[in-house]
Length: 178
Image (tube, rainbow, N blue to C red):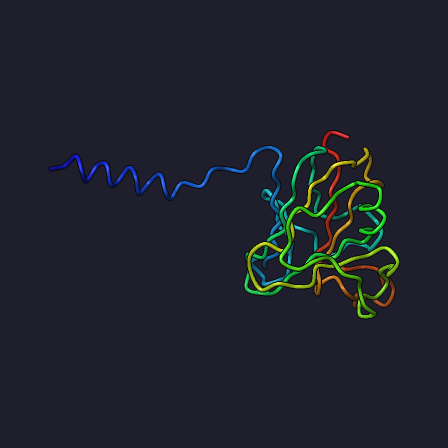
């Protein structure tokens, strides 16, 4: 009589098990911190409250190897999208490519203050789930070669008159160990 119960329990447990991400898979979550500030979160780290556009320092760092995938996902209560500061030249130079996305990358509009419209692209915000999955393929060593990203809409414009390029929710994808 107990055998069917045990078999059912083992089956139920195996269907609920979600395998951990492999070393080549990285998750970046758009969410809120304990103070309800919008943040990127990955592997226990959180994006600093402020960083500067065009500068890889003081950002959430995602260390990857070429061939890895990076999934951007909304896990909080607010909408988030991804804006890649140098998407056009990075895609053209095979630094990364789009693996999947519910919304194709598009040009930014004039509401993206201090972004370069000739280079930046955005997914646009989504309410929940995956925003975009990219495959990193030709990233070169050094922070200066990193893939700079921010949030659409939370990185669009700054509030600091003295430092107009300062924004929240900025990150950089860099080659690990380099």
